[in-house]
Length: 109
Image (cartoon, rainbow, N blue to C red; front, top):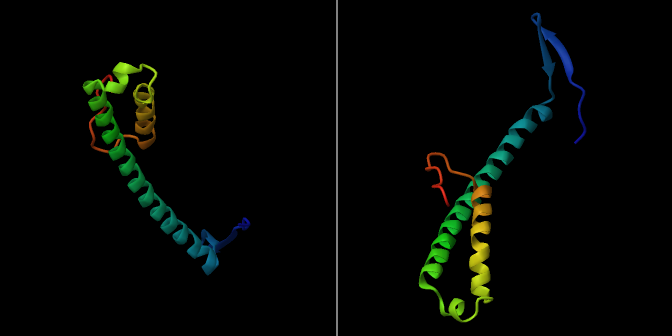
């Protein structure tokens, strides 16, 4: 989009900028686009938060259970996934951010 040189005018002694009807409508269209994008991002963030919670519960359950795969083979895929999970969950929480009104994360989480 090419930049337009603003047209300055004076109306009743007040300096103003004149816009064509197309230029006047462009900001409203941009606001609608940004609003729709923000709405989609909120949905994605909420899904990421829900998925992070599910994965945290899954990791805790697997660690508490002491799966047979962990007992027989310390290099198992389950062990590798459990070792990687806290870092990945921390990244997901950082990306999703805290929702307004939600409590601050407890230490160690």
